[in-house]
Image (cartoon, helix red, strand yellow):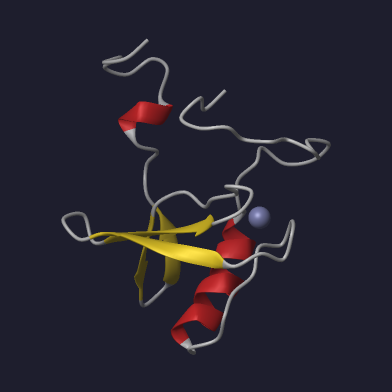
Length: 96
Ligand SMILES: [Zn+2]
């Protein structure tokens, strides 16, 4: 699957291993409020990754690697961006 690093799929019965829009909306709201956000899977701390150039954000669990898609925020709330090229098997495959 991703193959970037070791991802332990101890529970792959549901979901694709990423946070849903509803999850991200909730977590982001907490994050903005200054609260600590936790991974819904293992309750570990979640870190915020920021892409300054694209003004995009991403929530990543520091333990299990559960991550949201890149998203931006606006008046309508959290908006997922298109998946990056590295996740697209039919894109410009720089690495196969
Ligand atoms: Zn986790």
